[in-house]
Length: 232
Image (cartoon, rainbow, N blue to C red; front, top):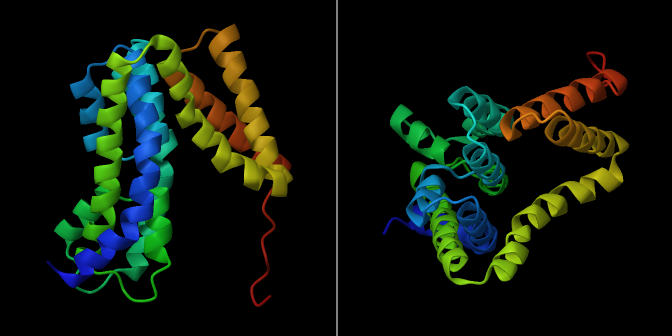
């Protein structure tokens, strides 16, 4: 086995363990939304995006349109395009277009953070290994969660499905406590989500899109980023 691939797999082990628990919650959530086990696993095999998958399952369960799904996923997953652009500056010269396209499939927040921290240029074999172990954890966790969702009592699966939302809260709270701008945009997004979804009865997908765009625009206008003059 290629040594770079093995090193990537080794580096991806902590991510795999984390994904195993998070995707377990997604598997349970998918079953609660009346998806089949095969459908839940298929979503995880073809998508490595926890927030995007949760929102997507919500759109499916609500009978949303294809356009609603497309716009929802673009808004939620746009950050991966920016990560890929940043990561492209660290790629080894052996990275051909097919390698780039395959690697783009597996860029997540955690994989990006590990890859960009590597001191040497990134080789295709290393990135494949780094993606492979988290992929196994994400897919296996979904399968286990979906299976458990069919077997465990409803009271237990309902409680366990909250793991996924707990992860989202754990991600946003630390930076929100340090930066009032982040706290403000999160607070606005939550308020808009409640207003759009429960008062105006707008579907999950469009509610997420509108809430994200409105809160981002308002925060950008109220707290603009200061531009430094050239040479400072």
